[in-house]
Length: 253
Image 1 (cartoon, rainbow, N blue to C red):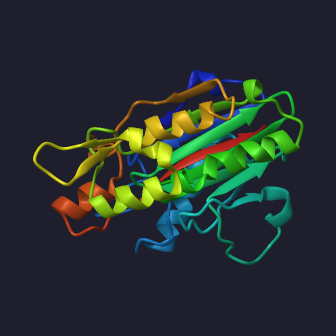
Image 2: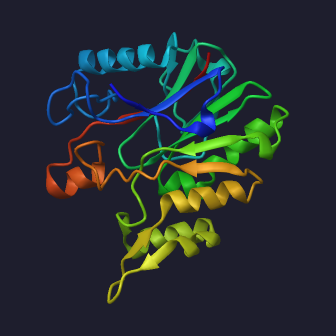
């Protein structure tokens, strides 16, 4: 099983990575490394896939939340012993051995780290979470723990790219209403009311505006590589909309 890593987060005390859809236990249409319990896959396969990833990352336990396209950030230390399924779209952690995970299939998985304060975070960002400020809120959590923006490293994992994310006028209007600066990242198609939205570009701009300098996108477009990645949009257009979810994960060793 291949885990996609990035040099921005290659530190001795951090384990991180993004999964593909390959080399897991799930059957079609979730073949084969599906990591979500909420898409119709058999729970036993999801659990086996998650354990496989934990082992590959050399982490001892994992923490997930129910993602709701919000700007809510939770501290792992506050919820790690809860029996409830909590709703949020980002997690922070200062606990060694704990992997914090988000599941994605076009939305952006975002990993954060500041080795100086020994803190990591993970976020799930579709267009709603992005314009609502999910990354702003994660960065604020780092600053509240004594971090400086220049010391935060951020990697955006495989997600739908600017040449694939076609959106209608309603989504564009809602985004610009929440954040007028988002207008720069919509490119109207000729003779159409539809636009292409640059999600990773917008996220990078948002974080740079907060003073974060060490940011990159892996450059992999989930929609353009359906054999390698799960893509909800690709599945909805060409199949029946059923597909799996990949993982963005990070943890302190």
